[in-house]
Amino acid sequence: MPLEPHEGRAARLLPLRPPRPSLPALYPEESKLVWSWLPEVSGFCPPRKSCHDWIGPPDKHSNLRPVHFYVPENESPLEQKLRKLRQETQEWNQQFWANQNLTFCREKEEFIRSRLKAKGLELRTGSGQKATLDAEEMADFYKEFLSKNFQKHMCYNRDWYKRNFAITFFMGKVALERVWHKLRPRQRKTST
Image 1 (tube, rainbow, N blue to C red):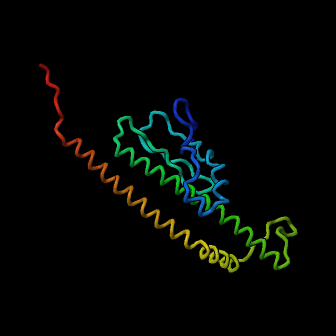
Image 2 (cartoon, rainbow, N blue to C red):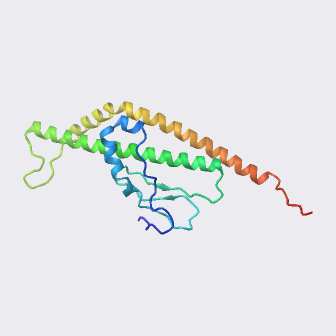
Image 3 (cartoon, rainbow, N blue to C red):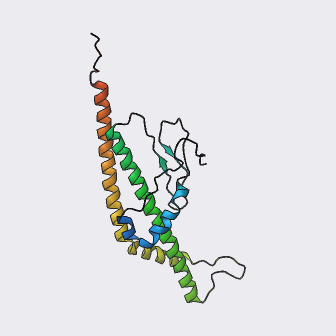
Protein backbone atom coordinates (compact mmCIF):
# COMPACT_ATOMS: atom_id res chain seq x y z
CA MET A 1 0.00 0.00 0.00
CA PRO A 2 1.57 3.32 -1.00
CA LEU A 3 2.16 5.89 1.70
CA GLU A 4 0.77 9.39 1.43
CA PRO A 5 3.24 12.14 0.57
CA HIS A 6 3.83 14.67 3.33
CA GLU A 7 4.73 18.33 3.53
CA GLY A 8 8.31 19.47 3.63
CA ARG A 9 9.72 16.79 1.34
CA ALA A 10 9.33 16.08 -2.33
CA ALA A 11 6.36 13.88 -3.15
CA ARG A 12 8.25 12.41 -6.09
CA LEU A 13 10.29 9.25 -5.91
CA LEU A 14 12.45 9.98 -8.94
CA PRO A 15 13.42 13.31 -10.44
CA LEU A 16 11.51 14.01 -13.62
CA ARG A 17 14.12 14.28 -16.34
CA PRO A 18 14.07 13.74 -20.06
CA PRO A 19 15.11 10.23 -21.16
CA ARG A 20 18.80 9.47 -21.40
CA PRO A 21 20.13 9.81 -24.95
CA SER A 22 20.74 6.08 -25.35
CA LEU A 23 17.18 5.04 -24.45
CA PRO A 24 15.24 6.88 -27.18
CA ALA A 25 17.70 5.53 -29.72
CA LEU A 26 16.61 2.00 -28.79
CA TYR A 27 12.88 2.70 -28.85
CA PRO A 28 12.01 6.26 -29.88
CA GLU A 29 8.22 5.91 -30.10
CA GLU A 30 7.88 4.35 -26.62
CA SER A 31 10.11 6.79 -24.72
CA LYS A 32 7.56 9.62 -25.00
CA LEU A 33 4.78 7.34 -23.75
CA VAL A 34 6.73 6.05 -20.78
CA TRP A 35 7.90 9.44 -19.54
CA SER A 36 4.35 10.76 -19.72
CA TRP A 37 3.28 8.42 -16.90
CA LEU A 38 6.46 8.63 -14.80
CA PRO A 39 4.84 10.88 -12.15
CA GLU A 40 2.48 7.98 -11.33
CA VAL A 41 5.53 6.00 -10.27
CA SER A 42 6.62 8.91 -8.11
CA GLY A 43 3.65 9.01 -5.72
CA PHE A 44 5.34 6.86 -3.09
CA CYS A 45 7.04 8.65 -0.18
CA PRO A 46 8.24 7.17 3.16
CA PRO A 47 7.66 8.76 6.59
CA ARG A 48 9.62 11.95 7.26
CA LYS A 49 11.75 10.58 10.11
CA SER A 50 12.76 7.41 8.32
CA CYS A 51 16.50 6.71 8.15
CA HIS A 52 16.40 3.72 5.80
CA ASP A 53 15.78 3.08 2.12
CA TRP A 54 12.13 2.29 1.42
CA ILE A 55 10.76 0.00 -1.28
CA GLY A 56 7.42 0.97 -2.79
CA PRO A 57 4.65 -1.06 -4.39
CA PRO A 58 5.29 -2.59 -7.84
CA ASP A 59 4.92 -0.22 -10.76
CA LYS A 60 2.06 -1.23 -13.05
CA HIS A 61 4.10 -0.69 -16.22
CA SER A 62 7.53 -2.10 -15.40
CA ASN A 63 6.54 -4.50 -12.58
CA LEU A 64 9.57 -3.20 -10.63
CA ARG A 65 9.40 -1.92 -7.08
CA PRO A 66 10.65 1.67 -6.84
CA VAL A 67 13.15 2.46 -4.09
CA HIS A 68 13.20 5.73 -2.18
CA PHE A 69 16.78 6.25 -1.09
CA TYR A 70 17.54 7.67 2.34
CA VAL A 71 19.79 10.74 2.26
CA PRO A 72 21.67 11.16 5.57
CA GLU A 73 22.46 14.68 6.77
CA ASN A 74 26.19 13.98 6.97
CA GLU A 75 26.45 12.12 3.66
CA SER A 76 30.04 12.00 2.42
CA PRO A 77 30.85 12.77 -1.24
CA LEU A 78 31.57 9.07 -1.82
CA GLU A 79 28.24 8.03 -0.25
CA GLN A 80 26.48 10.64 -2.37
CA LYS A 81 28.13 9.30 -5.52
CA LEU A 82 27.01 5.76 -4.60
CA ARG A 83 23.43 6.87 -3.91
CA LYS A 84 23.23 8.81 -7.19
CA LEU A 85 24.61 5.83 -9.12
CA ARG A 86 21.98 3.59 -7.52
CA GLN A 87 19.24 6.11 -8.38
CA GLU A 88 20.40 6.42 -11.98
CA THR A 89 20.50 2.63 -12.27
CA GLN A 90 16.98 2.38 -10.88
CA GLU A 91 15.70 4.99 -13.36
CA TRP A 92 17.48 3.26 -16.24
CA ASN A 93 16.09 -0.14 -15.22
CA GLN A 94 12.58 1.29 -14.76
CA GLN A 95 12.71 2.91 -18.20
CA PHE A 96 13.98 -0.22 -19.93
CA TRP A 97 11.39 -2.60 -18.46
CA ALA A 98 8.47 -0.21 -18.87
CA ASN A 99 9.35 0.17 -22.56
CA GLN A 100 10.00 -3.55 -22.96
CA ASN A 101 6.66 -4.48 -21.38
CA LEU A 102 4.83 -1.90 -23.48
CA THR A 103 6.42 -3.25 -26.67
CA PHE A 104 5.71 -6.84 -25.63
CA CYS A 105 2.01 -6.19 -24.97
CA ARG A 106 1.53 -4.23 -28.18
CA GLU A 107 3.26 -6.85 -30.34
CA LYS A 108 1.42 -9.68 -28.60
CA GLU A 109 -1.95 -8.04 -29.35
CA GLU A 110 -0.92 -7.46 -32.98
CA PHE A 111 0.20 -11.10 -33.28
CA ILE A 112 -3.07 -12.43 -31.83
CA ARG A 113 -5.11 -10.10 -34.04
CA SER A 114 -3.24 -11.15 -37.20
CA ARG A 115 -3.50 -14.89 -36.42
CA LEU A 116 -7.21 -14.65 -35.65
CA LYS A 117 -7.77 -12.65 -38.85
CA ALA A 118 -5.85 -15.29 -40.84
CA LYS A 119 -8.18 -17.96 -39.41
CA GLY A 120 -11.21 -15.82 -40.22
CA LEU A 121 -12.13 -15.36 -36.55
CA GLU A 122 -13.20 -12.23 -34.68
CA LEU A 123 -11.40 -10.75 -31.65
CA ARG A 124 -14.46 -11.58 -29.53
CA THR A 125 -16.36 -14.84 -29.48
CA GLY A 126 -20.14 -15.03 -29.81
CA SER A 127 -20.51 -14.88 -26.03
CA GLY A 128 -18.40 -11.70 -25.83
CA GLN A 129 -15.26 -13.32 -24.46
CA LYS A 130 -11.89 -12.38 -25.91
CA ALA A 131 -10.66 -14.96 -28.42
CA THR A 132 -7.32 -16.59 -27.64
CA LEU A 133 -4.70 -18.68 -29.39
CA ASP A 134 -3.41 -22.05 -28.24
CA ALA A 135 -0.07 -22.52 -26.46
CA GLU A 136 1.81 -23.62 -29.58
CA GLU A 137 0.81 -20.52 -31.52
CA MET A 138 1.77 -18.29 -28.60
CA ALA A 139 5.12 -20.13 -28.35
CA ASP A 140 5.78 -18.99 -31.92
CA PHE A 141 5.20 -15.40 -30.84
CA TYR A 142 7.45 -15.69 -27.77
CA LYS A 143 10.26 -17.20 -29.82
CA GLU A 144 9.94 -14.52 -32.49
CA PHE A 145 9.81 -11.72 -29.89
CA LEU A 146 12.91 -12.97 -28.07
CA SER A 147 14.81 -13.45 -31.34
CA LYS A 148 13.88 -9.98 -32.56
CA ASN A 149 14.92 -8.37 -29.25
CA PHE A 150 18.03 -10.48 -28.66
CA GLN A 151 20.48 -7.63 -29.33
CA LYS A 152 18.54 -5.23 -27.09
CA HIS A 153 18.58 -7.78 -24.25
CA MET A 154 22.30 -8.40 -24.73
CA CYS A 155 23.01 -4.66 -24.46
CA TYR A 156 20.77 -4.44 -21.40
CA ASN A 157 22.54 -7.36 -19.69
CA ARG A 158 25.98 -5.94 -20.48
CA ASP A 159 25.02 -2.52 -19.09
CA TRP A 160 23.33 -4.13 -16.08
CA TYR A 161 26.51 -5.99 -15.15
CA LYS A 162 28.63 -2.85 -15.63
CA ARG A 163 26.34 -0.82 -13.42
CA ASN A 164 26.15 -3.47 -10.72
CA PHE A 165 29.92 -3.89 -10.70
CA ALA A 166 30.31 -0.12 -10.30
CA ILE A 167 27.74 -0.06 -7.48
CA THR A 168 29.45 -2.97 -5.72
CA PHE A 169 32.83 -1.25 -6.12
CA PHE A 170 31.52 1.99 -4.58
CA MET A 171 29.80 0.07 -1.78
CA GLY A 172 33.20 -1.42 -0.90
CA LYS A 173 34.82 2.01 -0.99
CA VAL A 174 32.09 3.44 1.27
CA ALA A 175 32.50 0.54 3.74
CA LEU A 176 36.27 1.11 3.83
CA GLU A 177 35.76 4.85 4.30
CA ARG A 178 33.43 4.24 7.27
CA VAL A 179 35.87 1.80 8.86
CA TRP A 180 38.72 4.28 8.32
CA HIS A 181 36.78 7.08 10.01
CA LYS A 182 35.99 4.85 13.01
CA LEU A 183 39.60 3.69 13.43
CA ARG A 184 41.25 7.05 12.79
CA PRO A 185 42.25 8.78 16.03
CA ARG A 186 40.01 11.73 16.75
CA GLN A 187 41.68 15.09 17.12
CA ARG A 188 41.00 16.63 20.51
CA LYS A 189 40.45 20.30 20.90
CA THR A 190 43.06 21.71 23.22
CA SER A 191 42.34 24.84 25.17
CA THR A 192 45.17 27.24 25.87
